[in-house]
Length: 392
Ligand SMILES: NC(=O)c1ccc[n+]([C@@H]2O[C@H](COP(=O)([O-])OP(=O)(O)OC[C@H]3O[C@@H](n4cnc5c(N)ncnc54)[C@H](O)[C@@H]3O)[C@@H](O)[C@H]2O)c1
Ligand SMILES: O=P(O)(O)OC[C@@H](O)[C@@H](O)[C@H](O)[C@H](O)CO
Image (cartoon, rainbow, N blue to C red; front, side, top):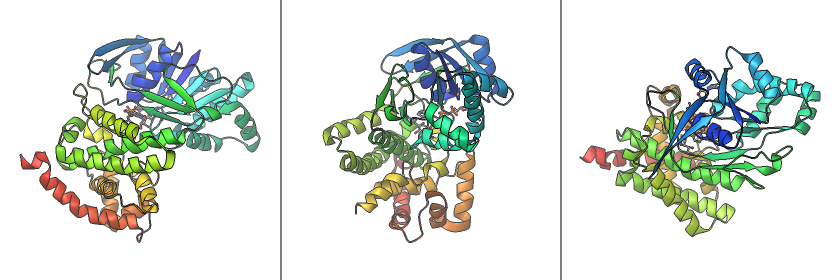
């Protein structure tokens, strides 16, 4: 069995590629990073280190790579004979790989009738559906019909914290021991892929929203408040009782939404939140706040981890003050090493906070959430004055 994994980065190697290889797939990584591609082809294996209470090392074998910048034909031919295609490249990159996938699927149709599933493992709502839309921009109406019968684009939720790596060996990747991979089983074409650790469900939305609006909401607020308070890592930030309290309250807000919408058991959900905060505190992982805070414009998107739940709560007549504080902190994110942060600050300088929320979060100036965020900006100043890094 052959799996094609777009993205040989942190989650690509540390989680998706590792599970695929452990399930008996030969894994072909597609990436544009010359160093990674060369190293994978030279070594044909890499090490995954699970760092929890216990440390466990796994050698991931039968892997190789193709550089999609220089070897397009090879990528197309490999997709044509693959048994599964997955991606972990970042939501903004999905449109950039769509033409290559379309070409690969076109070639496949000329060679075999076997169905194929393409699963985008990105932190977003309906990532595979979005990838399908982009792929369909590169095919004819007639091809679309055949593609729809033959190729599945099941959406997925993936959860495993994989920080930026700092080993001498460019392929070794340290990951947390926790992981979850849930796929929309109703959109799979042909047989369900046999992947260890992957669960197929009939209704993905509750799982996807639970993950994005708990793990990623909490993570983002920790990162933006942590950055504002001068912390470097997620652990340092969440260990500040002031920040932890706000994160806990924000997750109480998203929790009330999720319990209401999907009927999750309140006690089980409270335990889920506790577990997640414990994951942020993992002493064996050093996760930079700037990794978790990356791409603030994407993270301020209308359905993303901050604005998505905040808008839904307001529609229910609730006032998500802590989410709004998180949004205010995201808007204050001015890290110069992040291209989106720089653009966000330029937009704010030109149009104000409300202008930026209209442009990036799809809000209108008179919307309640905009007012709430403006109010919470004042509270942000108090937080900065009270957090431990400033009081010590
Ligand atoms: N790291 C995590 O903890 C984690 C967990 C769950 C989900 N995710 C999601 O997985 C995705 C990737 O995150 P990551 O942390 O692994 O990022 P990363 O930057 O470590 O990896 C992304 C990889 O994609 C490659 N890439 C970029 N453009 C490409 C292109 N045009 N074609 C092929 N490859 C290309 C990069 O070179 C890089 O190796 C994101 O959507 C992220 O939200 C990450
Ligand atoms: O990958 P992003 O930029 O959407 O979000 C940053 C982190 O919150 C994210 O990568 C988490 O580590 C991951 O989603 C945990 O499952």
